[in-house]
Length: 171
Image 1: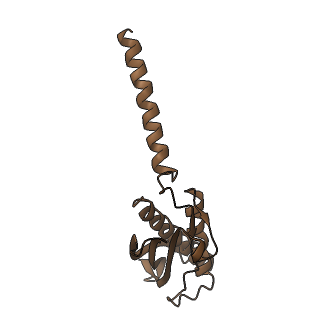
Image 2 (image 1 turned 180 degrees about the vertical axis):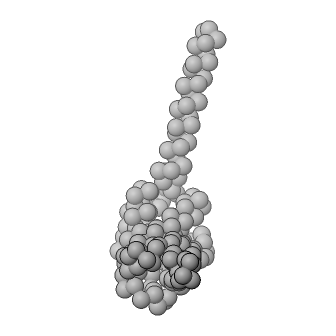
Image 3 (image 1 turned 30 degrees about the vertical axis):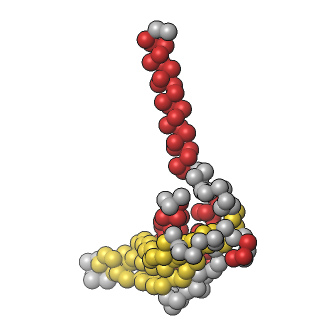
Protein backbone atom coordinates (compact mmCIF):
# COMPACT_ATOMS: atom_id res chain seq x y z
CA UNK A 1 0.00 0.00 0.00
CA UNK A 2 1.38 3.39 -0.91
CA UNK A 3 2.06 6.13 1.62
CA UNK A 4 -0.87 8.29 0.43
CA UNK A 5 -3.35 5.41 0.72
CA UNK A 6 -2.05 4.57 4.19
CA UNK A 7 -2.29 8.22 5.25
CA UNK A 8 -5.81 8.51 3.84
CA UNK A 9 -6.90 5.31 5.59
CA UNK A 10 -5.35 6.52 8.87
CA UNK A 11 -7.11 9.87 8.54
CA UNK A 12 -10.45 8.19 7.82
CA UNK A 13 -10.09 5.83 10.78
CA UNK A 14 -9.13 8.78 13.02
CA UNK A 15 -12.21 10.73 11.94
CA UNK A 16 -14.47 7.74 12.56
CA UNK A 17 -12.89 7.23 15.97
CA UNK A 18 -13.35 10.90 16.89
CA UNK A 19 -16.94 10.89 15.63
CA UNK A 20 -17.58 7.85 17.82
CA UNK A 21 -16.09 9.61 20.83
CA UNK A 22 -18.19 12.71 20.26
CA UNK A 23 -21.35 10.64 19.99
CA UNK A 24 -20.38 8.69 23.09
CA UNK A 25 -19.81 11.84 25.10
CA UNK A 26 -22.91 13.80 24.19
CA UNK A 27 -25.72 11.34 23.49
CA UNK A 28 -25.94 9.71 26.88
CA UNK A 29 -24.66 6.33 25.72
CA UNK A 30 -22.25 6.27 28.65
CA UNK A 31 -25.14 5.69 31.07
CA UNK A 32 -24.51 2.55 33.12
CA UNK A 33 -26.15 -0.47 31.50
CA UNK A 34 -28.65 -1.15 34.29
CA UNK A 35 -29.93 2.44 34.43
CA UNK A 36 -32.97 2.99 32.19
CA UNK A 37 -35.38 5.13 34.20
CA UNK A 38 -35.19 8.24 36.33
CA UNK A 39 -37.61 9.66 38.87
CA UNK A 40 -37.75 13.46 39.13
CA UNK A 41 -40.43 14.56 41.61
CA UNK A 42 -41.53 18.17 41.90
CA UNK A 43 -39.02 20.27 43.80
CA UNK A 44 -40.86 22.24 46.49
CA UNK A 45 -40.44 26.00 46.30
CA UNK A 46 -39.02 27.08 49.66
CA UNK A 47 -37.95 30.44 48.25
CA UNK A 48 -41.24 32.31 48.62
CA UNK A 49 -40.61 33.67 45.14
CA UNK A 50 -44.13 34.78 44.42
CA UNK A 51 -44.03 32.97 41.06
CA UNK A 52 -46.62 30.24 41.40
CA UNK A 53 -45.30 28.00 38.64
CA UNK A 54 -41.58 27.97 39.52
CA UNK A 55 -41.79 24.32 40.64
CA UNK A 56 -43.53 23.29 37.41
CA UNK A 57 -41.00 25.16 35.27
CA UNK A 58 -38.04 23.54 37.02
CA UNK A 59 -39.57 20.07 36.82
CA UNK A 60 -40.28 20.49 33.10
CA UNK A 61 -36.73 21.77 32.45
CA UNK A 62 -35.14 18.85 34.31
CA UNK A 63 -37.32 16.22 32.65
CA UNK A 64 -36.72 17.68 29.19
CA UNK A 65 -32.97 17.74 29.75
CA UNK A 66 -32.72 14.15 31.04
CA UNK A 67 -35.11 12.69 28.46
CA UNK A 68 -33.83 14.63 25.43
CA UNK A 69 -30.13 14.29 26.18
CA UNK A 70 -30.00 10.67 27.36
CA UNK A 71 -31.72 7.37 26.77
CA UNK A 72 -33.42 7.55 30.16
CA UNK A 73 -37.18 7.50 30.45
CA UNK A 74 -39.19 9.10 33.23
CA UNK A 75 -40.98 6.99 35.80
CA UNK A 76 -43.73 8.31 38.05
CA UNK A 77 -42.57 6.69 41.27
CA UNK A 78 -39.36 6.13 43.12
CA UNK A 79 -39.85 2.35 43.43
CA UNK A 80 -39.60 1.85 39.64
CA UNK A 81 -36.63 4.20 39.16
CA UNK A 82 -33.03 3.27 38.48
CA UNK A 83 -31.91 6.84 39.26
CA UNK A 84 -33.46 9.61 41.36
CA UNK A 85 -33.04 13.38 41.18
CA UNK A 86 -34.75 15.28 43.98
CA UNK A 87 -34.39 18.52 45.82
CA UNK A 88 -35.92 21.90 46.54
CA UNK A 89 -35.84 25.47 45.29
CA UNK A 90 -33.99 27.27 48.07
CA UNK A 91 -33.74 30.93 47.09
CA UNK A 92 -35.16 33.33 44.54
CA UNK A 93 -33.68 36.80 44.29
CA UNK A 94 -34.79 39.65 42.07
CA UNK A 95 -32.38 42.52 42.55
CA UNK A 96 -31.05 45.54 40.67
CA UNK A 97 -28.19 44.71 38.33
CA UNK A 98 -27.70 48.02 36.53
CA UNK A 99 -28.67 51.50 37.65
CA UNK A 100 -29.65 54.10 35.05
CA UNK A 101 -28.92 57.84 34.99
CA UNK A 102 -31.98 58.60 37.11
CA UNK A 103 -30.63 56.24 39.79
CA UNK A 104 -33.37 53.71 39.14
CA UNK A 105 -32.72 50.12 38.22
CA UNK A 106 -32.95 49.56 34.50
CA UNK A 107 -31.71 45.96 34.53
CA UNK A 108 -32.60 43.44 37.23
CA UNK A 109 -31.06 40.07 37.83
CA UNK A 110 -32.96 36.94 38.78
CA UNK A 111 -30.88 34.45 40.74
CA UNK A 112 -32.30 31.06 41.74
CA UNK A 113 -30.60 28.47 43.93
CA UNK A 114 -31.73 24.85 43.96
CA UNK A 115 -30.46 22.14 46.28
CA UNK A 116 -30.46 18.76 44.50
CA UNK A 117 -29.47 15.19 45.20
CA UNK A 118 -28.79 12.67 42.45
CA UNK A 119 -28.41 8.99 43.22
CA UNK A 120 -28.77 5.55 41.75
CA UNK A 121 -31.60 3.57 43.34
CA UNK A 122 -29.41 0.59 44.24
CA UNK A 123 -26.72 2.69 45.93
CA UNK A 124 -27.07 4.32 49.37
CA UNK A 125 -24.62 7.18 48.82
CA UNK A 126 -25.70 9.91 46.39
CA UNK A 127 -23.54 10.73 43.38
CA UNK A 128 -23.98 14.35 44.41
CA UNK A 129 -25.91 16.47 46.86
CA UNK A 130 -25.25 20.14 46.28
CA UNK A 131 -26.62 23.52 45.33
CA UNK A 132 -26.97 24.83 41.80
CA UNK A 133 -27.42 28.49 40.97
CA UNK A 134 -28.76 30.00 37.78
CA UNK A 135 -29.13 33.65 36.89
CA UNK A 136 -30.37 35.88 34.11
CA UNK A 137 -31.09 39.56 33.64
CA UNK A 138 -34.04 41.48 32.22
CA UNK A 139 -34.91 45.07 31.40
CA UNK A 140 -37.37 46.38 33.99
CA UNK A 141 -38.24 49.41 31.85
CA UNK A 142 -39.56 47.40 28.87
CA UNK A 143 -41.88 44.69 30.17
CA UNK A 144 -41.11 43.95 33.82
CA UNK A 145 -43.60 41.11 34.38
CA UNK A 146 -42.79 39.07 31.26
CA UNK A 147 -39.12 39.98 31.61
CA UNK A 148 -38.98 38.53 35.10
CA UNK A 149 -40.72 35.33 34.00
CA UNK A 150 -38.37 34.90 31.03
CA UNK A 151 -35.30 35.56 33.20
CA UNK A 152 -36.54 33.01 35.76
CA UNK A 153 -37.03 30.47 32.96
CA UNK A 154 -33.50 31.11 31.70
CA UNK A 155 -32.07 30.68 35.21
CA UNK A 156 -33.98 27.41 35.66
CA UNK A 157 -32.69 26.12 32.30
CA UNK A 158 -29.15 26.89 33.45
CA UNK A 159 -29.76 24.92 36.65
CA UNK A 160 -31.24 21.97 34.74
CA UNK A 161 -28.26 21.91 32.36
CA UNK A 162 -25.74 21.97 35.19
CA UNK A 163 -27.58 19.32 37.24
CA UNK A 164 -27.73 17.07 34.16
CA UNK A 165 -24.08 17.62 33.24
CA UNK A 166 -22.97 16.89 36.80
CA UNK A 167 -25.03 13.68 36.81
CA UNK A 168 -23.65 12.36 33.51
CA UNK A 169 -20.08 13.32 34.38
CA UNK A 170 -20.17 10.56 37.02
CA UNK A 171 -21.16 7.93 34.44
